[in-house]
Image 1 (tube, one colour):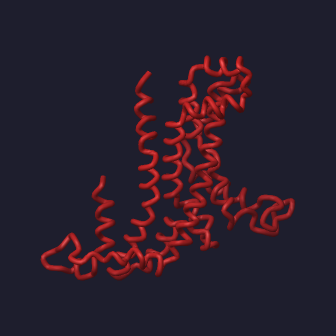
Image 2: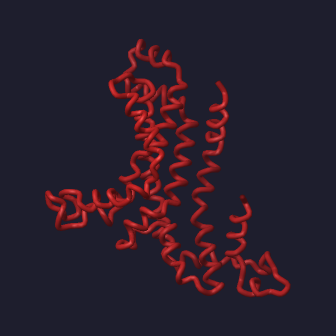
Amino acid sequence: MILPFADMFIGALRAPADVYATPPRYLPAVPQWNVFARVFDELPMARWFLNSVVVTTIITVLQVTTSTMAGYALAKYRFPGRAAIFQVVVGAQMFPFFLLIIPTFFILRFAPFLGGNDLMGQGGTGLLGTYAALCLPFAVTWYGVFLMRQFFMGVPDELLEAARLDGASEWRIFRSIMLPLVKPAIATLTLFAFVYHWNEFIWTMTVTRAVPELQTLPVGIYLLQGAFNSLDQKALQQAALSVSITPVVVLFLLLQKAFVSQNFLSGVK
């Protein structure tokens, strides 16, 4: 599992002489550390990086917020249609997002009164070419709602009843009692959402082909692969990939304790 990442990092440090060396030489004789500085000098990495951070952070915050609120409602409130909604949440996980790309694209393209559109959604571009087009389709995640609902189900109802007897409002119960109890699940959902959308490619490429300034790291590196013909440029590409995975590694290290705690608690009654 580690070998592909190590090979990517070592490949970025190789000079062309290391590739053609006889006998073959895997480790570079003189590591080319300057390649990581060249990534930001020769490629629009700073812009791609900023776009990735903005889009992924917004989506992660939206998903954690909607998932915790919906999961809590499905787990602790009794209302008509609750079972049907939960069945929809479970069933919707069977359908991958790429099946919805075309209708989602047209909904954003013909949104009334947005992006120069009139009431009928004509005359402009709608939400296309904006951060909203990259974020809104992922504001809710079925998996996140299911995960948080299952975790909230494990919290005793007696805690809610005791809080209500003490005069706590429903919002106070959710914010001050329930959320602290499900921190491991929130950390897990945050990690999963951030990693997935940091690497998300198909939708981002679809929306940003006409707006290069909104391209994220995966799309930017992919669209430039045709320019990486020489060995020197191949090393530059691998350096760009190494830089792109750094935030994911850092986030995992920061959330590792809570992530492991969630998996441990899931196996303990």
